[in-house]
Image 1 (spheres, rainbow, N blue to C red):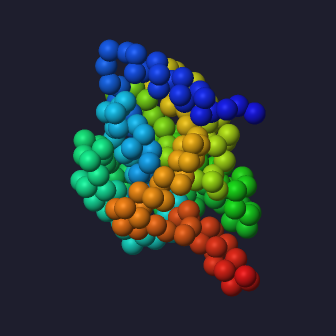
Image 2 (cartoon, helix red, strand yellow):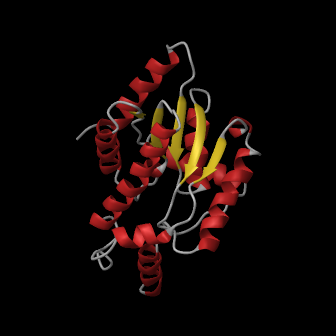
Length: 211
């Protein structure tokens, strides 16, 4: 099994030894997951956060998460130069992707396809707008499969024919997830208890009811 954090550190060291700060498009699922990622990357990249999440179950939740990102990047010293782009809410794309997989358990094939959906859109946006790298905050979560995330990113880099590079990640490493919780408390960030989709919300509610 690949150690993607080691590969990430190697990339970062190579970039730091370069003569410019490259542009990174970072897909983000929410503000708490973004917090430590931005803290870690802000000194290395010119960062734009791409909030593309058609999986989120309703527009109110979508807007709440997006607004927290805007607030955080105007508040945290290390994130003041970070730009935020709204990928536009369009849940029909997610539901079309999820057809036939509605009853699958969390962390299965539907989740893989959801990672892929969001990361592909990010890679395409990165190419169209001249970014040097793309990545995602998803790997900071202990509930997300970092192997899948990095395999998808590597595949997409190939599909983009080298026009943008994928930044490897396993942001939960070295207490990354713990640090995101600390930052969430420090900045009083809205911290949701499910990934965003109606299926995750359903399964989370079911687990609570049965506990």
